[in-house]
Amino acid sequence: MTDSGSIQLGRGLTLLLGGARSGKSDLAVSLGQAYPGNVVFAATAEAHDDDMEERIRRHQLERPPEWAVLEEPLLGASMLDSVDPSAMLIVDCITLLVTNLIFADKTNEQIEQHASILSHALVSRRSPSIVISNEVGLGIVPDNELGRRFRDVLGRYNARLCSRAETALLVAAGRATRLETVSLDIGH
Image (cartoon, rainbow, N blue to C red; front, side):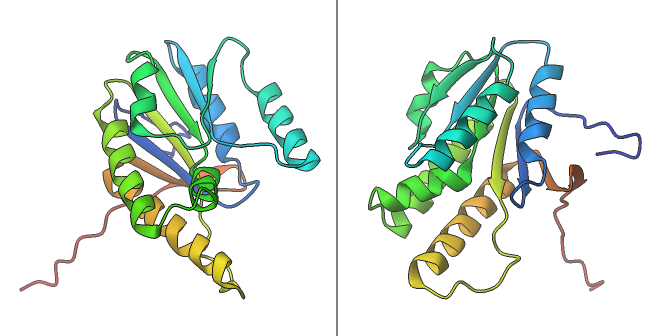
């Protein structure tokens, strides 16, 4: 966000990164509502229990009903071919996508390849793409192998997206801070 509280989005990829309940999805919905064209929402969640079913239902109610929805738990680059090239694309969320890929028995290398291919497809679109993901590297080290693998794989996936994003925002408590690329210039 700028000092005036507005975000200028370009044609490219915007990454919204933050913790659980940080306001990432609300911000994405607000950005989608401000977009002058059509919006396509790509959902990666699957309802494996009653709690997740309720969470999905609440998210559905928060989105404008006129938005097209793709339910794609294993969202791949080829699936973007069906998206109107002039529509804004909102992907919610990479966190669940990585979870789904892990439980689909994909190796870390396959997931990193997925990140590379999907991020390339997202930046190649002619209309804005907004991608939501959780930042899970700020907490404690998980006490089990699966938890550590998830944290590491999601962290690398997020880093890949962020490296290709035109805009990257860290969202906390409903506020966004622009993430900047740091270049080392030590004066030599």
